[in-house]
Amino acid sequence: MRVRLGAIATMESIGSRHANNQAVGTVRDVSRVGIGLETGQPPFKGQTVLLRLLLDDTIHELRTKVMRVERRGDSNYYKIGLSWSDCSHEQLAFLDRVLEVLDGQPLE
Image (cartoon, rainbow, N blue to C red; front, side):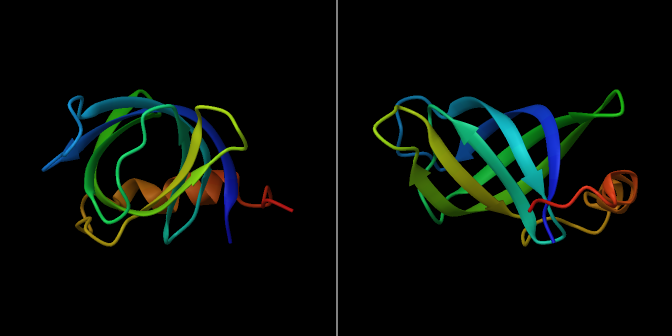
């Protein structure tokens, strides 16, 4: 189940083929599987991304994998989906707390 989460995140593409491997995005939703964001500078599908997410006055640095990149209409913005699959248990310790706080606010 995905739940809404309003936050800002930064992304750093590892092994980037872009001239600029840095991006800022807005968080759309989160689940136990991954996180959805919107950005104007998307990484490539399959790429590893270092995600920095500010929650509860703490910056969480997470190693993620790009699973989805979808252009939003004719705009220069993209919906991306990042998987938690490359994260350690320690890196994801915050996820249970976030989902507990957001429980009852699933996306329709």
